[in-house]
Length: 149
Image 1 (cartoon, one colour):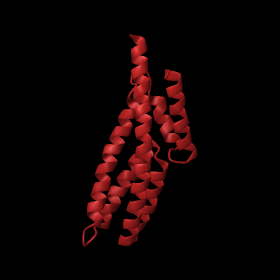
Image 2 (image 1 turned 90 degrees about the horizontal axis):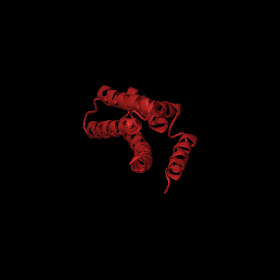
Image 3 (image 1 turned 180 degrees about the vertical axis):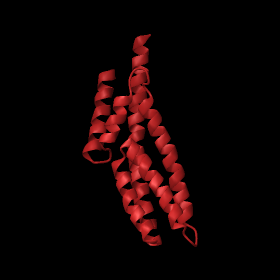
């Protein structure tokens, strides 16, 4: 498939993520920072976000499995995830974190457990779309590299 078709697929995916509210304007800002001198910038940011998010989600799961919940610690993890979500434009994850933090403030274990479930769902939905996006980016870069030879 020609690079134009792959770029069209990528644009359709990103635009649908914006329409659904999965991504916000911050993601477009990230995309604008990518250029020919750093063609993998967005992929690197996404990979770091996903690694960090996986670690935080694991810590949250462990923290909420404890008999006595350290709510300030849980809140700190959620705050960190909210910040990294904001920085990549992950709107749904960020909004789910805001709700999660409310339950932390109320020391509501059941609310936190439900909120963790929502955050995980939003994150995994985003991650699956990011994976498709990165596959398209890799195919575009490979095709363009082949053309330059």
